[in-house]
Each structure stands twice: as C-alpha cells, then as structure tokens.
Amino acid sequence: MFRKCIFFLFVIKLSLGFGQKKICSKTDTSNCLVNEKFISTKFEIEKKFESTDTVFTRQTPLLADMDGDCVPEFIVQEGNNQGILIVDTKTGLTKWRITTPYIDPKLTGMAIADVDEDGSPEIFIEAFSSFPNPGNIHGKLFSYHADGRLYWISDSRVDRYTHSRDEMGGTPALADFNQDGVPEIYVNNKIFNARTGIKLADGGANGIGTEIAIISGGEALTIAGHLDNDSTDLELAAGYTIYKVKITNLNGITGNIMTPNNIQIDNRYRDGYTT
Image 1 (cartoon, rainbow, N blue to C red):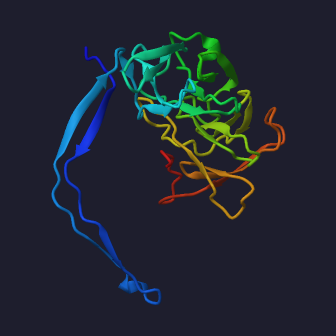
Image 2: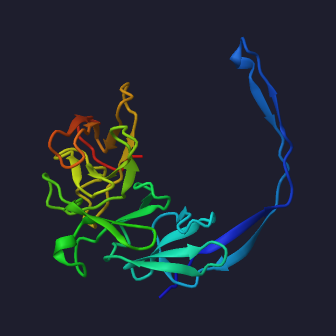
C-alpha cells in the first residue's frame, strides 16, 4: 500500500533569459513581432516539507486562508476519504480536520468560496452515493464552514437523471448565474442555492457533461460562462447542451428556467466533459 502525501517543492532557477524586444507598427500588424533569446537553464528542486497525514486527492490541492492569518492553507481530502484536512503550507502539519461523509475518491472534487461573506471560505463536497453512507444522504451536496461546522445539506441529490438509471455525480463549481452578487453552486446540469443547499434548477433529460454509457462509472464536468449576448445572466455548458439559465426564485425551482439548446455532432447528441 502506498502512502500518499503532499510534497511542497521549491524551484530555483539558476540563470535568467534575456528580455524581449518588441517591433510593432500601429498601421500594419503584420510587422509586429517579438524577439526572444533564451539561454538553456538548469533547475534544482528542493523538498520543503512532507505532510504528516496521508491524503487522497484527484485534483490540484486547493489553497485558501482558512483561519484568517493571511497565510493560505492546503485543503485536501483525507486518506480514508471520510474527512477534509487543513494543512499548514509552511510545515506540512495538519492544523485541523473536518469530519465528512464518505467521499468517492475517484470521482469527486471540492469547491471553496466565501458565500456567506463572513470572511472565511466555505467548503463544498458531494457525498458518495453508496455504502458506507446512509441512504438519506446518498449523492447530496454538503457544505462546511472553515472551522468544520456543518453549513447545510442539499435538499436533493445531484446524481440522478430522468433519462438514465445511472447515478453519477460531478465536480462542484460556483458561478453567479443571475448576477445578484451571490454565487450559486452547480453540479452536472443542476443548480443549487450556495447559501442554503436548495435546488433552484434542473436541466432534465439533456446534456449532463459526461457519457452515461461509461460502464465503470464517471463524473460530470460542466462549466458556466457568458455564452450569448445577454450580460444579465450566465449560461451553463454541459456536453451537447448549452442551457440558458434564468433564476428569479432563490427558495426553490418554481419560476426558474433552464432552456436547453442541444447541438448535434455527426448527427448525434454526444455528451461528455465540458471545459
């Protein structure tokens, strides 16, 4: 069994390249060029520390100032997949641990943001949709305050779809869909209130950002952004679907709309990761 730890590496560059020289004509951009001269460089890697606790992570470790000391900490999944570790970036020591439901080590990432504007970030994870978690929390989002207190549990699962019996979660992310200054949290084609965990919108039987036919299981990866000329909201891209999102009700799905715009490739609706 291999022990997985965080290694913090410091890169020392022993020589520097020459600067750049720009030659540019304002009237003819074809004359614009940049001359770069580089000398081969040598790098040395110095080990700064090794974490004291075993960790498991499928994403780049997250960094955030969790205790307000102006020094960011690593936020990583514990090795037994039942906790989150807040790790000192200077020493590798675990500052504190947050107990969580079992988190699927293969499929789920974390998101971090200060959504309640108290000066400390909240952490968002998805509970694994099987044993050892109890059935009433399968596939639900959990949010924690920086000190480990539970903030909320979502009112519905993120891993169920009207067009498939497969239960696949996704990577949580945050975006302000209705541009009211408070981000929502979204997973696959579902959007939740980031302050309460209440589901606000569901894209239904359209793109979810992964291939449902994957036998070994998979996760959805979707992305929000300005994808049309309307600056008052954001759209959600999920596989073959771009959803026009309109959120006016922050306490439920009534009145909120996700209009799917589906795109065929080679006469097929091809779902998959979206970045």
